[in-house]
Figure: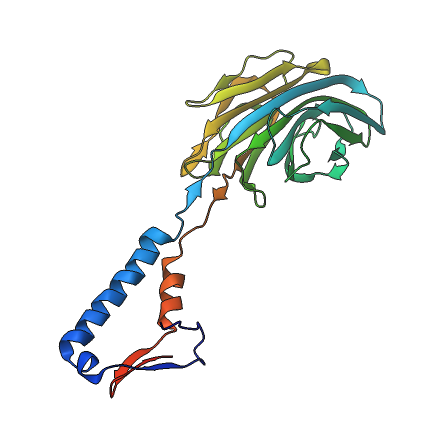
Length: 285
């Protein structure tokens, strides 16, 4: 039995009956069988790419009146499943800002931030990839006076690195609509976060969007968020009576599970071998 070693420097020779291997018919048969083996490995034996579904697992809303800062605040959050991503969505007002957030003691990363034209109203999205499972503490640090509406979300089925992409934003001091367009893909989910100086202003979603929270916070700080299934480009449309606003949106990237097939790499692997039949010998380099 011939056991090829996958190295271009290796050489294996085997004496074979010359009559059996020097005929053109046997050479063609060997070539045909070798081709079938390669095709079988590429298309059947190698695990195919499988995609996990992005799922909003658990969400929790927290809001507060004008908190005198600098200060910290915290709350407990318990995902239902084992999260692959935590996002925290901030709609805030007053002169201060939320300057940092930790989840389970780990620092979260600010994905995107937008202020209105003053600035006073602020929209933020923070994330933590591969977060700890089970009940954890969310802690925010405020660098000044802040009124806020915050949504904490646990996701499953997301990528564990590069779990967000394509952040977009808009903001102003007299707008009544916002339509950031986010680059996405089928299987992903796009989520937005809106803050209004609204005092209970009604908000209308765009087509295919699903409201996730709508909280009339203190000091007329209205916080809102919605999701939409991913596609090539997703416009997160929100409209309301004209007022100060800040609006952010981001794509949540789905995970790629299992062994992905790289056909080019597989063929290059086999290309490293040279099989020759010469003078009754089968040689594999």
